[in-house]
Length: 561
Image 1 (cartoon, rainbow, N blue to C red):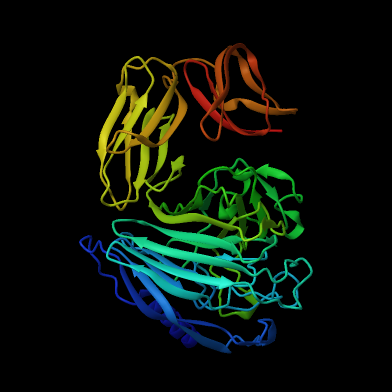
Image 2: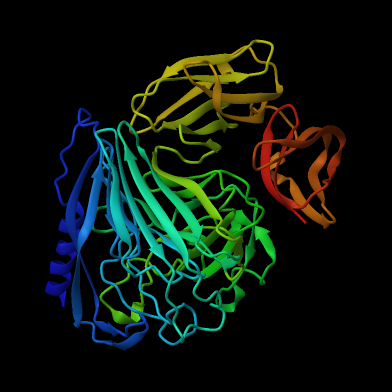
């Protein structure tokens, strides 16, 4: 068994490396090549309708499968492996500057869920990567079938592979919730890599070929393990889901650990893989941002999806839970459970909620994916760059983390504070494949104590602001040991209900407070002469409360119900 595991792991590793590891920044052109990807899974046999006929539970009964139509697309920064023959799957996203993999690949597949009623074909098997699912929820019909593909562009500047599949089949044994029937919808996916670009595109088009309305679901499934070793992909427990929504609404989980069905909770409660007591399903509530993804805080490497999300407002979260780490995937009983993070982009806000294509209607949208390096968080992001404005209250330092994604683009970065001294940093930003960061000590500046708006802007060569972030900060003196006064760290927070919060101090004093949301926007601020601060807010949610007494500052996260 150990020998078999070693041999099969080597097959996967060699299949993904394919062409070697040595590339230089001079190779900016895009290259397309054919390859064969080999994988392994526990043996099984399917019926012609893709339902499960027989399967083995013998851990040594392993079958190798090869996909000879796989494609490699690469430039000087990234290398993708695309497998049209198995669900139009982008199996690998390798970032050359870090020599790391950003997508999950199962070492050995195990069919699971047979006859459990959870999936369209009444079973599933995990491989990994990024792939389209339609026209039903929960992986849909096309996740394991071959898609037609063609090369629609192949130049030194751009390579685009087009894959498409028309839903013309139906499985009579599909569980009852999968009720959209044979839709005759065509899904077209185009994967594009560009010269001088660390980001790549996954463009989707849905075509209704009928002269009447058709119900459907569409989700892009992503299995994310940024910053992984090649051939050993995994998300450590301190991997964080970066989803700019304050709340999620709970769906299914064992024992309802993730929450009561359709009830809202703080997104911060399940942001880290280590927060996931078990497997489960959650959905981002009121999601309106243009990015989401995962950051691996072991090495501060992330992978992000960028889209305007007009056609894909849904964000589904799934993991197997914190106890499924480094499982033996050659053990059939594990059934695919491993430590990766599965985020989904949906045309609807939750599974089993149909959307409709009207007669002969087409819908299309762009999804872009890119690695981030050296970023502990993200405030704003688009196809050009990702920004994170940093403020360290203890050291009184202001700074930023920044990634740009076009290696031939130059920008101007402006970091400023709206104070009388006019603190401003302006600098030219050229591409750095490993990210950029800087900190500035405000104690060395002539800045009076008080609240100020800190802002970070990225401007193009026409001096247009293309990306920005701002937050209010409190610049003040640090409490010295010889200064008597109340200990703000002893401040108690009481939730009174009806969007009311009370902050209780250890003794009366003069306090300035500020409440701001997780986007950095101030929603309330005032000063009081008392031992308590009463706060009435207009909306429930997660906020940050900052309280200062002229000597020290404390910040607390508060949940307002």
